[in-house]
Length: 247
Ligand SMILES: [Zn+2]
Image (tube, rainbow, N blue to C red; front, top):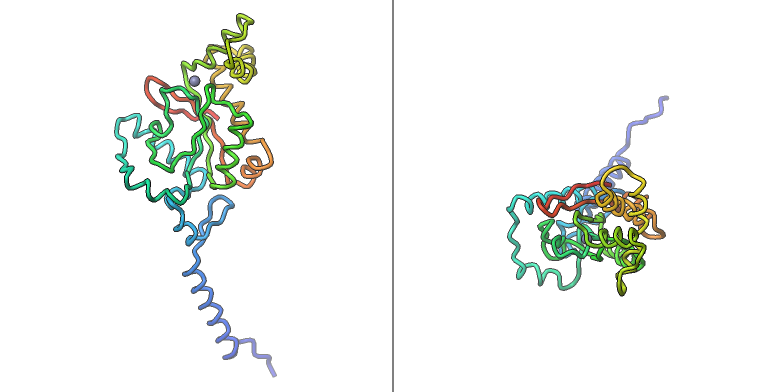
């Protein structure tokens, strides 16, 4: 007598049931993979801006596409009256930006972004201190922002003041000395490198702060390790409006 390995009626019914429940499950609960971060599609729909739910690389692409529109004078016209009520209950920005406070590079314009799209911290010299780190941690841990951009720029007054202060061995007036203290390591490191000290210091400061954000625990470094967060550095050119990714 041969053992019958073909499925009997009971097993077939069971398989059909489990398939059906799997299909029902799949239909009712679609998951989105964002790096290693899984988000329920229902939950995504509840977000004020579902289109902002992006993987880190897609968020970077969107930033650069926005910069391209800005550079070429073709910004998307946003109806802010439509966006405001959508954002009353919350926010889910697709990128966080740590930029210089310089009036010539407002991130929302530079990346042609609407309300609720960018979580922005600005400080002259675009460096991460405890306060900006805390803000970035909030963006990542609470708002699930997948991308942080550190944005420096040419002709930066804070970098210039630091170079002059170190050269003259004289602190600037008032609280400006705190900027010099923060930017001094990048300026000192740039002196060791060939080329234009101003440009090298500007770039080095962006790189240093990208590394700081990537490695600071316990929130940001963990998010980077889990591929939920990307931290990149960019340099803005005041004459063309272009942002180059440098780190
Ligand atoms: Zn600046």
